[in-house]
Length: 219
Image 1 (cartoon, rainbow, N blue to C red):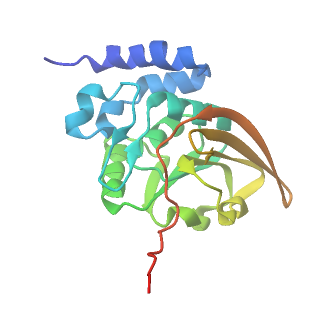
Image 2 (cartoon, rainbow, N blue to C red):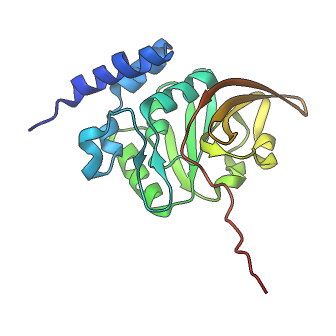
């Protein structure tokens, strides 16, 4: 049976985003236009618009649920002139959404296969102001800094200090800080050399491991 993705996408906006406090008009328009099914593995395309995280590989990388991405992006309050960095950008779905809202968006992703897939999809969708680069997500992408907005796409224990250094004065960083059973979405704002933070709302995101775990040796 052929799936009518246009209608499914509209249902996502009406029944998932709007009912979960995602109300920004431009963001809703972008999420209503970006074909999420392009970013889902073939065996998950039929459920691409379900309210669920979709596994992308065997290493814990996920395409986050639409509501999670919508709420993170909305919290960042992206302006048309902003340059945005997405840390742990996976297969690039959020970049395609943000590209419609910002001046430019770049993602850093550690999984080389996902970078290749994301790059091809963004080309296929003619996203000219977005790119994914392979690199150590914990270090961000200093070569393209400073950024007006940094979004960390996954649950983390703490924000690496190097990411704060890549924020422009007045810039903001959005992260979901793990607190055990829940994550707390926190917005950090940079003023001069100071970083202020405000806790926004509870969420539960897939974990994003920003540094490689060091093996423990027992003697």
